[in-house]
Picture 1 (tube, one colour):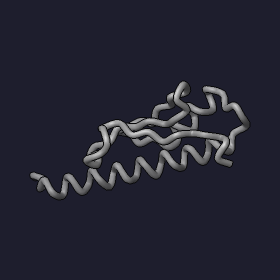
Picture 2 (picture 1 turned 135 degrees about the vertical axis):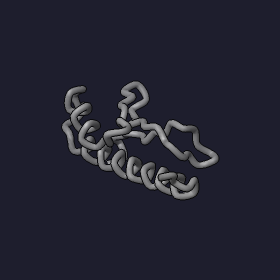
Picture 3 (picture 1 turned 60 degrees about the vertical axis):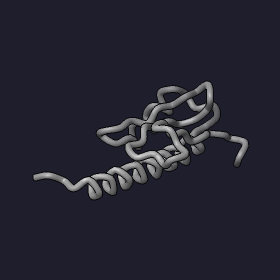
Picture 4 (picture 1 turned 90 degrees about the vertical axis):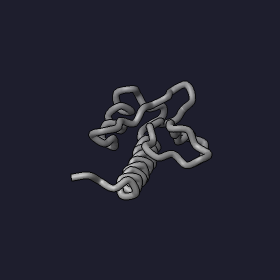
Length: 89
């Protein structure tokens, strides 16, 4: 069975949206951890919010969570990042 391209694109956009929401949930869970969070706790949080097809990655030097997008917006690259900043509290 062949999937029509427009349906496939829509499905990928929905999957990207779900991963963005999972990344936000992971950030919120990281904020609840005592500062500074240890690597094992960060990896456990990221694994809990990843999908089977795509993992969330932690970039400690930049202090952000990264993930790959299937269908990036025109102004985005295929890699998206969400910053983690404890001073926002």
